[in-house]
Amino acid sequence: MSKPPEPDNIEPPDTNADTNADATTDIDAGPIDAVGRLRVLIAGIPGARIVEGIVDAPFADVWAVMGDLEHGFGRFQPDMRHVRVLRRDGDRIEAHARSRYGMRARFDGVLRPGWCWLQSRFVIIGMAAVPEHGSTRVALTGGVRVPGRAAIVPVGATRELRRGLARLGQAVEEG
Image (cartoon, rainbow, N blue to C red; front, side, top):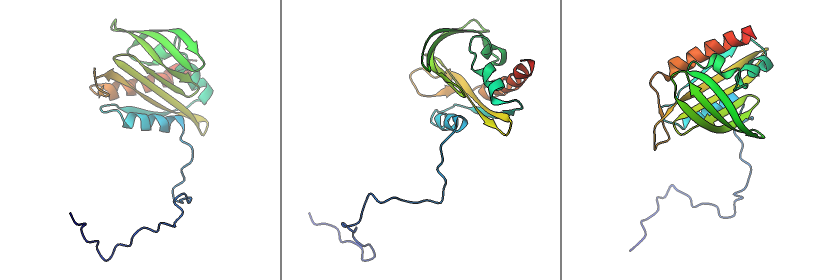
C-alpha cells in the first residue's frame, strides 16, 4: 500500500529542534487557591453544583465554624444533625454523620484549614474558604451520589447550598 502524498504547504517537523524548550504564555498560571481547587474538582463531577459567596468576617472566624465538624458544621449545614469524628491521621479524617432525616453515613476525607472534602458511599461534601480583603470567600458543594457512577443527583442541591451559605454567615456572627 502506498503512502498518501503530503500537501505542499506542510513542512516536515524539524528533528533538530529542542522539544524541551520552555514555552511561554500570556496567562498567569499562578497557584490555585482552595476555592479554585473546589471549582475544578466539581467541574469533573456530572450534576454537581457549587455555591460561592463572601462571609463578612475574617478567615479564622469563618473556618472556626466550618472546620469544626462536631460542633460548627451542623450549625450551618441544613440537613446535618450530628457529626462525630472517629479518627484523624494528619489531615485525613473518618467521621460518622446523621442527617436531620435520620439517614447515617460514614465519611472518609481530608480536613485542613480552608479545605474539606468528605465522601461516603452515597454522599459528598466539599467546602473551601480563602481570605479576601478582610472577609472570606466560601464555596460549598455536596449532594447525593449516583450509585455506580461518578455523578451527583442535582435536585435541590443549589437551594440547599445557598441556605447553608446564609446560615454560615449567621453562625459566624453568633460566634
